[in-house]
Length: 120
Image (tube, rainbow, N blue to C red):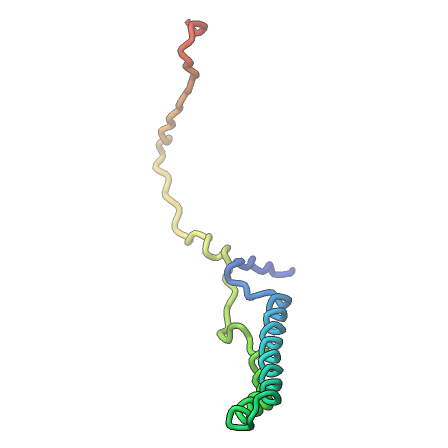
């Protein structure tokens, strides 16, 4: 017989793979845009000086940084999926012992009173 798995709480589930992939692509694209800007500034900035070298170093090392940054997960801490079913179950206790007497039953009878003369 197959064991039934508990339902997962929606708030404890991680991001969907599609949302996480979209987030990684955006981070990679942003970093590569910055690299392209650094490369263009390296070529355009005149006279040659320390700024040119700074832009060259950024253009060289930003691809590595972009890959590492994009492949880093959004959350590195492992999460366990919580089950709301386990939280709703009441603890097992002893059943109350029967006293032998019938329980008192209260009956409430409601009637409509709209203050009209038809009820009299």
